[in-house]
Image (cartoon, rainbow, N blue to C red; front, side):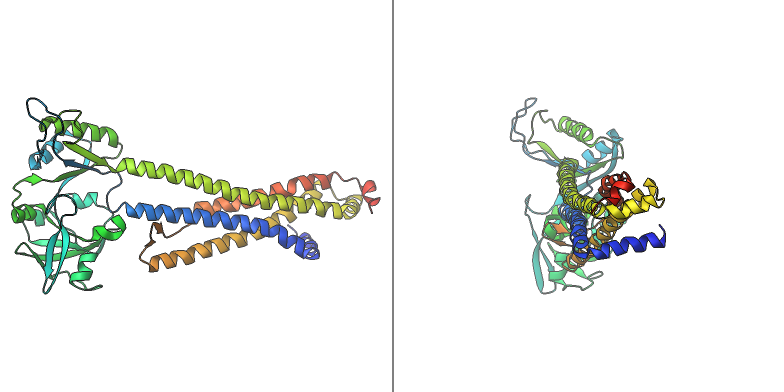
Length: 418
């Protein structure tokens, strides 16, 4: 675009400052709302996802219970117990397993806690014994200090533990590094080798102590019994199909009726993830619908104002054509003005929207990464690029009809206009 043309457009816009401002504000507001809504939707998605905790989103957790149906001469009400032979059998029979591990919880089932002590302080926390590959499945754990458990810890039955940040804050003090210090429960002393933060259940899963499975079995006298089996499928393996086959296999091993849903049951994270993904896809589609609707209102405003502008400049356009201006140059002039107003207004809306989201992200980060179910909002580069394309396309569409009308103005008829 030539400098003369730009100066001419700016002169025209300055002549109608209020009209130009009010028209541009529609586009500014539309793009601002679109950016804020998309960023808020991303923040909500992050907050909900953080509530899922540290587990791999494709993991399958299998628990045993009491049978509800008599089967093969065995009455109902029989307690099913997994053991390490089940783990070995699963490794042997299923090629589709990526990671496989076990988890034992001290105490009685859910909400079981053990008094964990450090010096004069004592608190009730969940103590879990975990086997190899467990922390490959808990792959979203945030390690704040030290290390995780490893093969040597299990093989040598080491008296070591990694503790959650909630345990550390109470027993040692917030911000204190407890690695190398000791905690005590059930009369045994364990050395703290790591600290983790688990966002699950709004951070309550950080009220845990993990120890090697072998140490747990020796401490609590569980022999080779296992409370819960957890696994993840290899990439490309159908999670639902794998879950069905593993459950069927375990039911056969423990003589549980195929239609007994209490003896052995599973929680497949893929189902929860899929349901949540569908919900957020619908929310995102609704946000785009609302945001683009608001933006379209602004575009219609610009189109109307361009029609009025062309009408006001009918004589000027007629003179231009009489002096040799081509229809193409007239179309270019009107479109340029429309795109310029749209792009500038949209740019300021985009910048302000990103600035607000960045400010909110800082506030969320200072609050610990989330506020309730709301995480840090974000607009990715793809959305910003799409917004720019939408702005240019919107400006073109807004000015297209007035530009075509202007190109068709006859010089003689234009000179007769008052």
